[in-house]
Image (cartoon, rainbow, N blue to C red; front, side, top):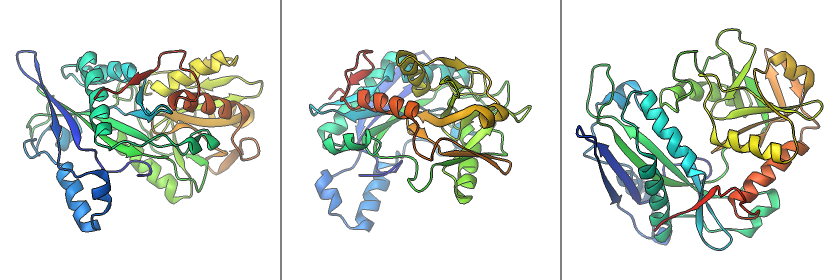
Length: 365
């Protein structure tokens, strides 16, 4: 099973394209594959060739607004194996709404949420039926499912042909799936602020836009090269307020037990896991605040720090470094509040805790 993201795409893919009359044409495409067992027995060269064929659509244009200018957006969500053998998606309705909002934010026609929901559920189910989805393992519960596997779903927009700077008016929407494991490397749990700026006011920071992740990728690589697990962005204007991680929202527990996270300005992505964590924290009796959070406040009052996201889940950091200064959180291990939120979130996702919120949606064959 793959660790983190990989290009081990599953065979079934969904495609839709917008047309001038306002309609969407849709299709499910079964890409080249063998059985999972047969693919495991292939040589490295044969397997690479098969995966490359699965990751290509010859009728999609190479030169377009997406490949040339990053004019596109995407979503990320997971389908989790359940103890009863089923596969369930976590809050796909929220991803559907955000994807439509992102496309409209880029002045594209918005992809209808009902089509989004149907496509991600069916892509998950069709690939599970072929054996391309992880099976539930009770051993994952030993570490609160931190090492649990899931099926990652990536819906994304892809523009029609274009070479001049322009707006996509007839985009495709494509949904692929790939198995995933843990996102962060287990070697370190330290974070560092980045000198780079992820988003400026009035820009596309609130959209899950392709182009936003160029700076994120650069900052994360720089952090990893310096021995850290994650890069944390500060605000563009004053360079003293936290915004988010390279691909995740950030939280702090302050002295007294208050859970605080940066408020949703137009430079911060409205994370679905972020909203979930805030709701779970309130249900656990924690006081929560969404507001600007400064470096000075965290260095003086912070007792726990973690990030949240589809890939990150709830991932704690033992320390945070800023301009040569470092603040340590607790004794270097995950804090009590963070552990409680992680255990509840993962427990719901993997079916170990009752889903009283109706957040989990079954896959469809």
